[in-house]
Image 1 (cartoon, rainbow, N blue to C red):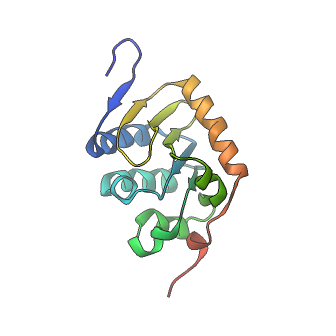
Image 2: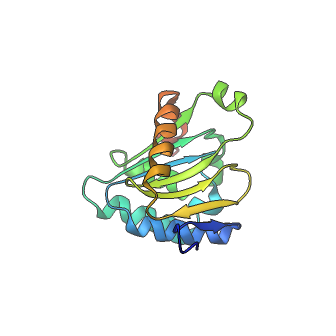
Image 3: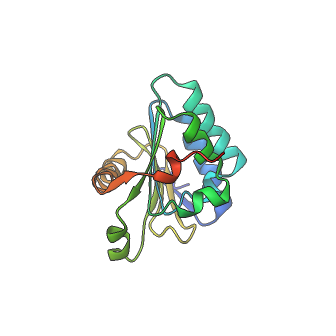
Length: 165
């Protein structure tokens, strides 16, 4: 960690899992996730998932909003967050961004926003290189604006709503 700025540089899946757990533990009101496909290695990890589940069930008025580039792999992968979203429909919302947007953008940034200041960021969702900061209001505001723009271009995931018997 950079002692002057509080930025934690990350360069591995293990580092992202550890920092995601730190940030999720501190979440109080809302979690916003932008991900290419809700990466199973990260968000499906037992510890990261248990933090998401604890937040969604343990905080009154908690909200988890997720925007994906694609939801095609969610069902086949047996993603635990998908299963949780089906049980917690008022708490967890999964949306998919317009495919035209994904096609027109060469890289798709992936990030996790905690309340108004916690940030876990990867500029390219295909590699685990990025940073984390527990209290970076300026970056959180910028990413929240990006999230809001993606939200305008998104529709609720049909895969997340579909129940398989």
